Image (cartoon, rainbow over all chains, first blue to last red):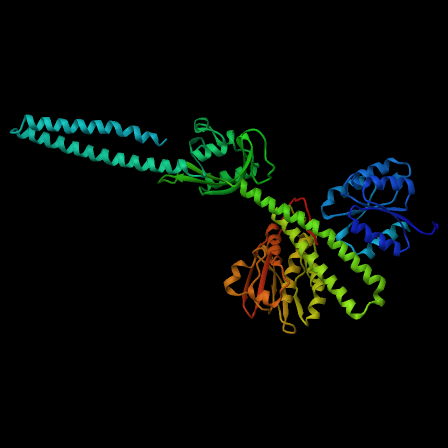
Length: 125
Length: 442
């Protein structure tokens, strides 16, 4: 893949949300890697070293917080850029994520998809 | 305690029988003797007196038996204590609810058995009300059954059954005073409302769960509509654009409704936190008004803010909650007014201990016969439904919850066809801080 393209990993178990996010980011010329849970997400992250990870919290098999902890144990993963995709009820987890160096999160239902892209872009600058 | 009366009636009965017998013997022995005659009469009268006394006493005892039976079999927990709160009596329901037998409980205090689990403040307030003010006290508390597991409630007070299980009770204690106004007894009545509380909790949990679940598909709709608009807007016909706008409008309406439901589940469960911070309230009100002004202008409406003349100190206000309350009132004012015929006035006043905010409109008003229901959850007046079908009946309910949780009051006057005036207050010392788990969804 061309170097100019930013590579992002989207870890989200809601297929419809994963679909629309992937669609949007590919229109915006990102290279997309998808994962339906934390386990696949971790594996993909360590293999592809994406520029940024969009990470859902509540997921089956392995949740976002577990994936984040394991990611931080890796030499590449400890500095990887992560934005949490949260729901309203995830306040406590967001606080926990901050201990793992994640200061960016967005409450899915409150955001326009264009703003999500903007947020990702601003992190990659 | 009531058994005393039963045993006392027996000697009376024996005594009266003896008196009648004596009188009869005396009368028979000295039929012609005047003195004996008088003695016999006196004895006879005495006998009758004792007989009637006995009859009254036994009737009284019967009445007391009736009362005792009634109190014994009452389904609420009833307890009588002396003025030092030592238990004198416990009915059957109390035995069942607490798990303690009357014999175990009599002579002890409730605090040593099932009570004593609430905050110090709760008991201080309770004792102050019943002992010092000598007034009945009403409260809600959680008790624990004798031994065993606990329940997961968090309520104002905690009691436990003998098995250790928690139960929530609605408590009323009344001091019983003698003619001099001194406390003789306390009568405590508790209703086990555990089931009711569980049902309420279930309802709240369900609303919270459902609202969360509804937000995900709604996000899918929103983001896809955005994609459609963003990518192909030039290729869309004007009709297709209109369909898209309808989808977006529907999505927004649904999102607002879901947020309202979530807020209600949080406010109802008293999970919301109130975090007052020093705030320039006039600037805040102005900015909230400007949020509504675009909508108001579209309807050709004016919102006039009468600011106070004197500058105000910073007031402790949770701006998120305050904004939601005022926004709901302003939206209603504009919403339920006829286009071009709507002037909404916002006043800010200082009245004694409070700051008062008035939102006065010239809208459709609230019919007199439903004014007492206007703050009820999901309630909408007929004229409001006819005027606008899309309302949820949650706006004013939320306003009331917010105002009351933060220590204020809310009320209104309204004339159907003429308009409404809503007033709410914030204590001079600022909104009351509440340590809760959650924030309002906005």
